[in-house]
Image (cartoon, rainbow, N blue to C red; front, side, top):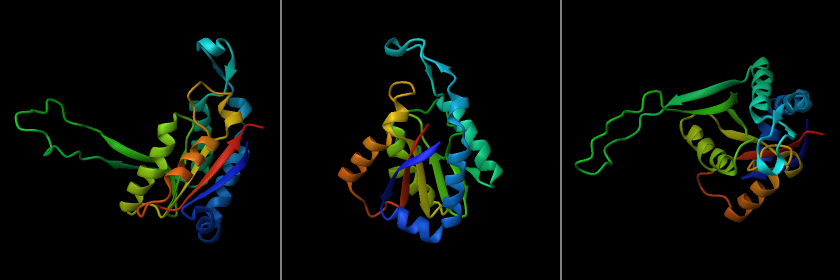
Amino acid sequence: MRIVGIYSFNGGREIIETQFAAELHEVKQIITVVDSERHKTKISREKTMRGRKLYSPRALNKAFKAESEERGWHTHRVACDYPTQYYVDGYQLHDSFPGAFREMDFVKNRVGVEVQFGKYAFMVYNVCAKMTIFHKLNVIDVGIEVVPVKEFANEMSTGVSYFEQFVWDLEQRGVSDLDIPVLILGITHK
């Protein structure tokens, strides 16, 4: 695969290129060595593309995980202790939240990486909430979000979001005081 789109959110590109160049180099290597064609294994059952062979987000994520772990990147998981004091009087919680957690795909040297081949809301959540939370928890300083460009997303199930849409929304939203620097990389299968 290759990088065909680069977007700097809140100075992400400049900071990552100067302060985390080795980590960025490894992320670029990982993208290059993942052979997308080996993961074009999903046969669509959707009405609009029934029987068509598509890229499997699950298989692509596994490939990214294997390549990242080989280079010393690791998943970082934090347990969630959800507050219950906000329930209204008279409500009784019948189930607790055992095993609830939040997870960053890959972390190394205070760089957090998320690879997202899912729905649009997950891209926004990763950059505008999850990375901020992991920064506040003192796990990361900067983030890198790897997403497909439209051309690549068209070769996946319907509903997979893409770089161009994501960048437009981030530009319209603007940067908040609590946002961390994030580099958004748009990738394609060609």
